[in-house]
Length: 119
Image 1: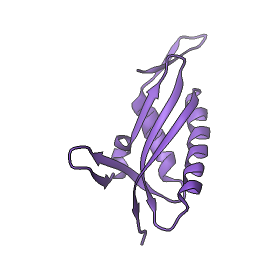
Image 2: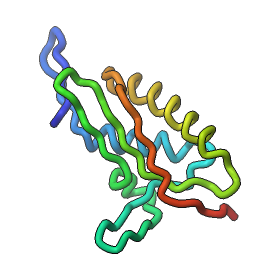
Image 3: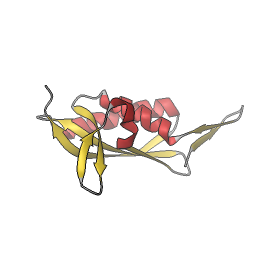
Image 4: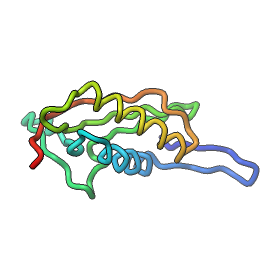
């Protein structure tokens, strides 16, 4: 479902792909996040996504009242505190996505799919 807002001049419609791409770019800037992960349900394998396909690691759901639910599948750096990295990711994404879209972020779910050592 697309998010829509009504203004004095007309209706603004936002595609969930746009929100996912923006949220992905914000997420990879956060400390401790190596990147987004894609999970192959058939094999159960996890792979790190390249910068141009960040949206595959994020699902965006828009409710009827334009509240967003974001699901992130991430790979974190080895040796970091996962709770601290997750809190940082949630606060950064919530603030920047709400500022970008004008919609409220109701919930952010983070699924840590793997750990990588950064060189």
